[in-house]
Length: 338
Ligand SMILES: C[S@@+](CC[C@H](N)C(=O)[O-])C[C@H]1O[C@@H](n2cnc3c(N)ncnc32)[C@H](O)[C@@H]1O
View (cartoon, rainbow, N blue to C red):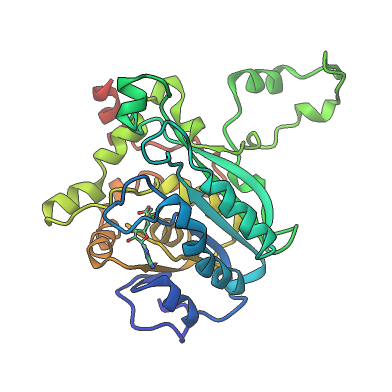
């Protein structure tokens, strides 16, 4: 589906959206202003060393990124959101961190007048311990397991509903709901009223994305799932280089559910393996994805050709996020991995 008639010929056309091959800076001009409900993206991060898809060094990052962000702001509708996932970086030759992610945030808010709605942390325990020199050899730094995720918006009240991304209640909360709760003052002085014992169908999720998927019972699951995913298998079968820095589909699903409704428009200007477009398509949101590398877009097409049993992360919007995350075949794989 071509979401806007102004877009060029798609590279891959699907039920609710399409991907386009080219430079996002140019392609963004083919989208009408005020038309996008959610921009969800993970641009190439600033890295100490250059990666294969043209990552910038941290000192040049803001200058490189701002022209994209300026256009993104124009394309967002008034109630729209911009989710920006950024990994951290070390300065060259030193166990000292770059502050580029924070510089980006300050520039986006001060120069382009974006509002910071909330900051999130994307937890990924399967990240390798790096740089080896500081973490494994000299042992003076620990493993970096989070990306920062800036939730930006044009206004202080972007469209959002946390009831669409409820978590499963903890065992203690379930027991409390069963047995009832006596209103009392907590040691902190907070008055907890009887409203606390109302079953809202799940708990409000936190701003650490991914943590709930790594409880002891499925600690190995996500890393294992990704390395066994249909996407990687099909890339191997068809001799296509898989994208080296994908975000998990559940990450895209979380923000799409939280911040949009069915048939809203989701844009990923740095689509890579098109996790965003795939999640949007499954959730019946219209979508537009841009990507510079044809190799990555060829691989991305394979996501849509997965067998139904491979659709591991797609859930209906009423089910709490942790329920139904793993299919039976996946649980078997996870059990074997343990
Ligand atoms: C971190 S990756 C995105 C990964 C993606 N979130 C996924 O789950 O597969 C960033 C992508 O941006 C692409 N890219 C870099 N510069 C671009 C540009 N000017 N226009 C469009 N895509 C670009 C790179 O080729 C790379 O695939």
